[in-house]
Image 1: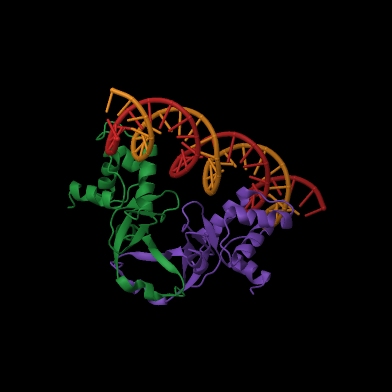
Image 2: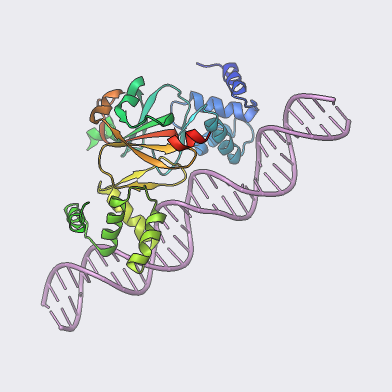
Amino acid sequence: MVSRAELKEELIKAGIRPSVQRLAIFEYVRRSCQHPTAEVVYEALRDELGSLSLTTVYNTLKLFVDAGLIMMLTIDDTFRCFDGNRSNHAHFRCNDCGKIIDLGMKKDFLSMVEGVEGLAVNEAQLYLKGLCGECKKKK
Amino acid sequence: MVSRAELKEELIKAGIRPSVQRLAIFEYVRRSCQHPTAEVVYEALRDELGSLSLTTVYNTLKLFVDAGLIMMLTIDDTFRCFDGNRSNHAHFRCNDCGKIIDLGMKKDFLSMVEGVEGLAVNEAQLYLKGLCGECKKKK
DNA sequence: TTCACTTTTGAAATCATTGCAAAAATATAA
DNA sequence: TTATATTTTTGCAATGATTTCAAAAGTGAA
């Protein structure tokens, strides 16, 4: 697991001062295997930090996204969630239980897209939707 | 171009009664080469129809999405827009001018994703973001 | 310590979307 | 046709995630 010191270093490298709140939020999102919303991050850290403002969580997550440290997912149109996993991966959302699953993705998947010449692509998100294994069985 | 009669037939086949509003909204989204929001559809059709409610536009677009007739895009996290193009395609959004561009996509792009076994995938959206040709030049 | 700058905070505002119940339109039955 | 049932549309109010804003707290430099 990535140490807190390494995460701190990473923030500094990105030109972000590692305040207590920022480091805690960064750590939480990076280590989470779920895909937390701002609200979830807030609920999880408010006690640990003694005090925390939801506004800070929103601002900080936006700061990280702009710096390219984490990703914002819009796979579910009713809420935004965040992903600290920086490997090349796709996302699957179950339409029944709402679960979001990470899926591996080959590096050259952009070769599947026609017409990218002339565009400067610097972010790619592949969203798959349907039924997960368990929900498929239930039906 | 698809005729109005064909569009009407398509609604009926999907089990949707082709009211005046529904047909107009369906026609608009299907024929648009842009990716209109509910608001844009509303502004475009309110005069043509004499009267129209924004609520109707929202309800109707949802109806079409649920029936699989059109797609809802969440590529821009600040608004939802709709796409009546039913070919297999990806979307690129320019971070500078906000333009959304359709890109062709090969049919077997799912072969690039690992771990889809066991999942029933029935929708896929590939979102690319970056700078379009014009905005790249400007910089 | 003082000063300038950055970060956090909470309350209020925003705004896209939805809920709801009445009105209008349309289909069905008699 | 007329009466009745069902579907669709409408406008307004409510919702709720996200942002704005200005004040308070924290931090680093001199």
